[in-house]
Structures are given as structure tokens and as C-alpha cells.
Image (cartoon, rainbow, N blue to C red; front, side, top):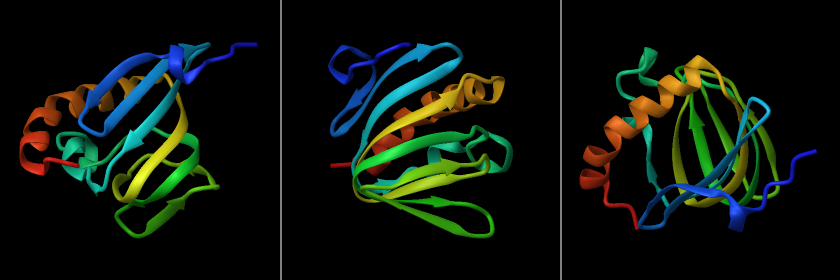
Amino acid sequence: MAIIRKDAAKVELKEGMIEVRAETVEGWNVAFERWPPGDYSPLFHGLPGNACSAAHYGYCLKGKGTAVFNDHEEHIQAGQAYVLRPGHTFRVEETLEMVEFTPLTPEYAEVGEAFMKNFPKWMAAARPR
């Protein structure tokens, strides 16, 4: 059994109110995430369909957000577990805090590369609180 504590997890991203702390365990990325209100869809530009090509499983601790797919939207809020299939972007209506589990697949690696490539430009334009 692996136990991951938020305060001991590696800080992968910290910029303003955005914070991602994560550890990899047995083929999974386990992340404690906080995202302030904003539209995060530009971070996926350059991926197939300009959308996240990874699946995520998680639990929302706080806030409200929306996973946006080509044909529908799925809303996430505090107290809900979720499964996000590939092909989504997301926006946050109220600061989201969640614990998320993502299989370490080649698609997930591609998402990470695109995300970090797009992040500086998005950050300069979005200026999240």
C-alpha cells in the first residue's frame, strides 16, 4: 500500500493560486490540485482535438468546475467523485480543490508537454486570481 500526503507530495506547479502537488505510484500520477476560476482550454492547444487525451479519476473537495467535451459538458462540484474520459478541456467557476488519479500513459505524457508549453502564454493572458 502506498500512502501519499499532500504536504509531502512534490510541488509540480505553483503559480499564483494554482497548485499541483503529485507523486507517481505503481503506474499512476496521484495529484492534489487547486485551480482558481478561469478557462483552461487554451492549455490543451496542439493536442488531438485541442483537448486532453488522458483519462482522469478523482474526488472534488471544494468548488465547481466544468469538463467541456465536443458534444456536452459535465459539471463537477464538492463532494463528488468523477471519471473524465479523454477529449475534454475544463473551466473553473469556483476555486476547485481535488485529488486526482491519472494512469501514466503516453497520452498523459503528451498532455503534460502541451500543457507546459502553453502555460506561460496562457498565464500572461489569463492572469488567474
